[in-house]
Length: 70
Image (tube, rainbow, N blue to C red):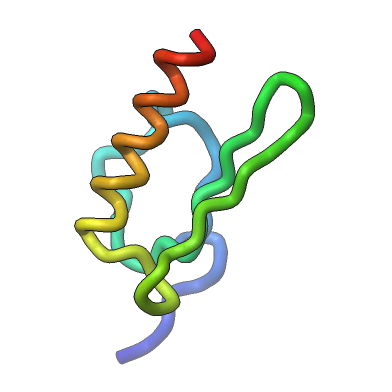
């Protein structure tokens, strides 16, 4: 199994800018940047990449943040 070039593995942008063909596997961290310049980095607890449950929990956390800060 060959590795994909780095340009295909990394993606920056908002969820609204996601391409339909973006592969959810291989996500190693999620960076949340606030308007104040602060940032929060979410990393998987069980391994080097996020699993489906951890992505689900991260999405719930981001939804919570958007409601509290919005």
